[in-house]
Image 1: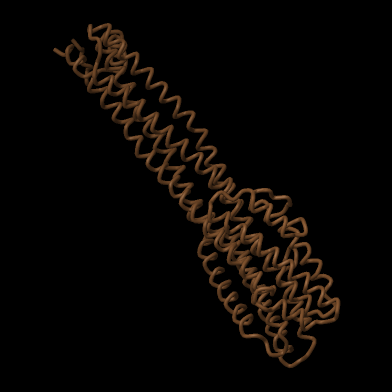
Image 2: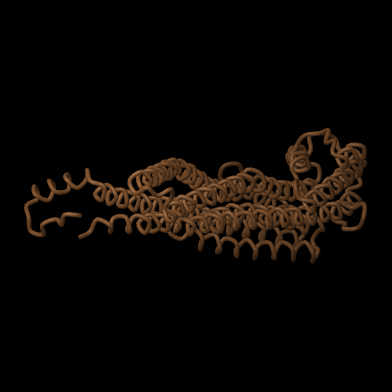
Length: 461
């Protein structure tokens, strides 16, 4: 028989009755049922909270932070290409070629659209907005310098090339130039990503609390089953066994989902993401190198700074003088040089990406070969032939090699970015599915209660 607690009795009376009942079989059953129920609810709350928080963080990374970082990398490449295009247009003389000029205008329009999109993403983030405004202000100044340079060039005044150099310096100036401001914007977003990674690491540590609750709940269920078997002469309680089995299913399912999400996130951020940044960097460097080649010709004998910049940039792509032998060896997996191209060839993990990386290497070999011909023409004083090689887009011209490299880089970026986005989406789905899976913890509590209730009812009068 279970004593009924006095409704209006003193707290002391109620406490005394509770102590008295706790030593009885029904009292212990009620206590065990309550403890299992509370543990089940706590397990659900902690598990669902952890998984939902982790899923939200991954969603913010996939849909906000990483697109913002890649957007900054794309903006850097677009602006570098604009500077290359205007240098090529200028190189054609007083009557600027329509193609390069159109490329310049398209790049400018694209840069303004990307800045507007970046401003929308950065709403409510003062530091990011300040950088975007700085880029916009300097881009307006750059555009004005280019317009002045083109006006003087069309009139045949040599001072036009001086304005073009000032514009290019504003674009590339270390620390305060337009591209440096864009890189600083990317760094702000990278810092945000680091904070989100830290938050995920902390969330992972909270899993220790979750594991502790699982163990505690499992111990409670085992002990309760043992107590029921001893006091009621029953070999098993089906509902308690079902509750235990459900807890094991919940634990195994959660472990699988968490391990999958952790491994996939590591692959996405530790490998695919770094390759994406590397590909965009290579693309930008190639734009800069091509632009410096053109600026060197525009300078007509006064372009040592541009030659030095060209050599520095191309050495970042490949440390060795590229030969057909090196290319052939790299195609068979033996990359015998260093640089960004070597890193990409060694790390590429998707078939389309690796094919594109090899095409980039072949195009770079052709690019450097044409550059050698350009320098030879300049040494012989044949500026016109050098300019034709730089501006041409037929096989054997610098423009054709550049276009091949750029197209291959675009395919590699598309391949890696698609896999990266898909992986993050699956991680996000897995974490939210795991959060929903925590409902089983409530099922454990309900099954335990239903398993003990008939035994408790046996003592009711």
